[in-house]
Every structure is written in C-alpha cells, then in structure tokens.
Length: 271
Length: 271
DNA sequence: CGATTCCTTGAAGGTTGTCAACGTTGGTGG
DNA sequence: CCACCAACGTTGACAACCTTCAAGGAATCG
Image (cartoon, rainbow over all chains, first blue to last red; front, top):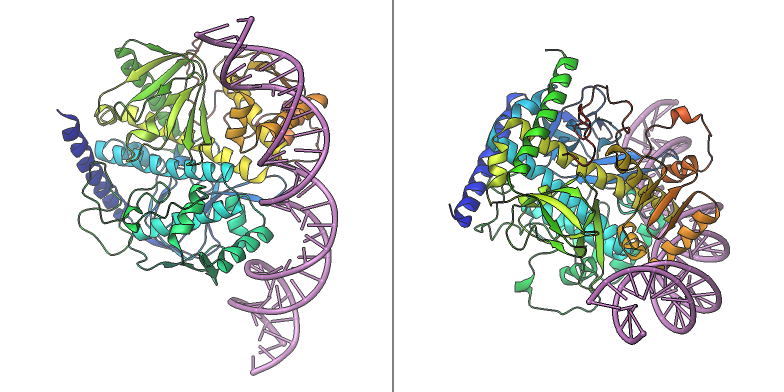
C-alpha cells in the first residue's frame, strides 16, 4: 500500500469515525444549559463527553488564591471532556460562556465501548490531537509574545475556527468573553487587556466593542500573531496558514484529513 | 455493571493496552540518537511514534523571528509523537536533550492498525490525555505565576515524574536543560532565569548547579508552585497532590487507572 | 587549546501589574 | 418607570517585574 493510498484511507476512516460518533451523540436527546453553568464532567459522574451544538464554553483551573486560569475555549462543534475521562484527578472544570445546546454521551464505560469501533477510536485520537495543538499554540503564544501578539493570536484563532464551521462569513464575529476572561486566558490583567484593545482599535487593526469583533486589517493582525515585526506585505493570495490550524474551507481536497469539514456541508455545527 | 466495577475494568484494560503497545514497540530493534538530533516525526515520514527508553527530549515551535518556544518536555518512559500523527501540519519538531535510546513504531498506517485493538486504543487515548494535562498545567503556570512560581512548578513537575518512574529516589535529579531552554519553556529570558535561580538558591529552597537539581525545601517549593503566599505549614503527611499529577508510587491501590506504574514494577522506563 | 556555547552579573528602560476611581451596562424589584 | 445593585469596562498614576543590552568568566567540545 503506497503512502498516499493509506493517507486517503485514513482520511476516509476519520470521516467515517466522525459520522459514527455523531450517531452515538444522537442516541440521547440534546440538552440545553444556561450561561454560567458548570459542565460537571468531573463531579456528578466522570466519563461524560459533550458535543457543543451551539454556544461557547471554557475550561479552567483554579489556584488557591482564587484566581482562575482559562486553559481552553470551546466553540460550537467542539467535543468537550475527552481529555478528562481517562484522567484520575478532576482538577479542571468547564463552564459555559453562553447558553448552550449540547449532546451528551454518558455512562461510565462509554469511552470503553466507543473505542471498540476503530474508526471512532481514530477520530477520538484526532480530536485529542486537535485540542493538543490548540494548547501548544496557546503555550507558544503566551510564552513568547507580548500582550499585543497574544490578543492578535486569540482573535485570529477564533476567527479561523468560526469560519471553518461556517459560523461567520465576513470579517466580524461575536465573542462572548469578558475582558476579565480574556485576561485569564492570555495571562494578562483586565486593565492591560483593555489598554491593548484600545491601541489595536486606535491603529485600526481590530475592534472589540460589546462582544463584537471586527477585523479591520487582517494582514497586520496576522503579523502581530506571528511576531513578525516588519510586514513583508505579500499578496493576499498567500494568506493561508494564519497561525497554524487547517485552512478554512476552500482547499479541502488535500492529502491530510479534515473531518471537521465533511463532504456534505451541513449548515451549522455538525460533528 | 456498577461504576466501581467498570472503573476497575477500565484500569485493567489500560494496563493491558500498555502491555500490548509495549509489545508493538518491541517488534523493531531499539535505536539510539545523539544529543541535538531531531526526532523527525514530521519530515522523513509522518505517522511515527517513539517510546523513550532513556534520555530527554523537547517539542518546540519556531517563530519567524527565530526564537523557539518549547511546548513540552519528554522524560524517559514517555511516548512521543501521538499528537502529531493525525495532524495535518508538521509545524512542531522534537529535539533530543541528551543521547537517547528509543523504540519506534513506523509505517504510515501504523496508528490505524494500532487502533484496531481496543485496549491499545484506550491506552493511546490515555497517553494523549496525559500529555494534555501536562500542557494544561503549563498554560496555567505560565499565565498566572511569576518567574519564581514557574520555575518551582517546572522543577517540581520533573521531580514528580522522575519519582513515578523510579528514576530518582532522593531529593536530587539531573536536569539536562540549559538555562536558555528553561527560558524558552517558561516564557522567560536567560538572564531572568539565572537571577531567579540564584534567589531560590540563596533562600535555600532549591539549587541547580551543573545540571543537577537539589530540592532543599519541598514545602516552600510546593507553595511557590501553588501561588500560595503564606505557608499553612501543614504536616508533611498531607504533602500529596504536588501540583496536579498522580501521586507518586505509594498509593497505587486506588480507583483511578495509572498504567504508568503497573503492578509488576520494572526497574526503569517500561512503557 | 582554540572556539563556541553557556553562565553570570550590572545598569537602564519598557512592558505589565497594582490600585483606585469612575462610568457604563444589564438585571431586579419596588 | 425608576432605583438600585452588581458586574463589567475604562482610565490614570505608580510600582514591580522582567527584558534588553553589554561584557566578562566558565564550561564544553572538536
């Protein structure tokens, strides 16, 4: 079997796994949550995974001095809780940022059963890898970029992820995070987040007002996120690879798998 | 099936998966690498995973301005490359910190085959979750602790992981990182890493000289890592849970799985 | 034993945190 | 409808932490 053949087979199997897992999620009726509720992936019964149909949520870790560090942010279409099901210690909680529509796979041994199906197992591994890559990007951004770069990285990341899910078309989207939460996510204080947002707005790069993000200068924003001080101002045609994630939408016919955007393009957050 | 029953079954299956994956690793003869070599998980042929028998390595991400951010550090016993095999973009590389003894599972479709075995699939998911929890801890530390806290967290983390693998017994271990690399890992400059290490040494909390770490005051170090300014100076008996990872060694008979420390305790870095 | 890399330290300056105050918004109940 | 309250947003002054820059010393490797 040639490399490209098995690569294609892998892609197909991942798409299959996505469908199968989606079917398992459909077994139970969807639920809704209010803003400010905890997804008790740890408390009530461990080994629960969620599929976000609509709404945002964030995963956080608490320190004894009572400030919380946000370690990941989930958007519609994301699967939540996979990293925790096999872990021993709870220690991390997930809280809603908006009201939420979710599908749930419950039961303590659900994951064991899911793993029996190879395509689902592969897709779950892909999902775990996807979350890992998000974390790696965040670590790199926080540890080597200043406040402007971190903000730019975050705003771009959400932009790309929403576009991939066809949840935004223009250069604007809704961001249900308070500046306090942005600070907890990027390792900054509210005051400084506010200052930097102001400066980005004054420079006409991006605006954030009333939870609404508008990207005014995508090129500049990308430069900031890359820590690339002098713009090479290359043609927009070369604007792919904005920060790391897979290209959004238009170039789906490639070697590497992208189950997040299946062949049959459904309107909203299909698994 | 009661919850505790399936929990026990899960633990057993994870131990089984660890053994099975270990067997797959043994299929090919172990290899060695020199210090400063790249584990080309991306270049030469994707879909390669490694098992570290001996030696350290680090995963990093490069920025255009040529400084690199270290996103994870691998110790003996760790499995490297799982997060990358299913990903589309290379973008992250792994480099050795010491000379390395490794086992390799190659072939493009290796992971697809591995996932056919449910216990291996479960164990791989557990490994991915373990790496994710490391990343989450790092994000939390970098985004909400100052330099002292970050250093303390890192030194404690290595300490716990080495103890869990029975690679150190006393309060001392070998740390094959330069201060430059420590800075790249924690988001600090060399100069500041040096200064903080000096202050930690002057306060008789921990020393790092010639790549040798000696923990002098475990309690203080733990406080720093927790951002817990005033020591409650509780009895040492309650010293568990140093930072997040699973308790080292002595309380293995618990509900939650810990395949990293199997029933039959082998001397060194068994999978 | 040269040459590179790493460690170490000081001084100066910048980014960010802290603190405080006030304006704004949104929800609640009188 | 308005008063109230709580949470959030905004801004300024100041301090602290950390970076930058520079230079000399130590260690490591071919």
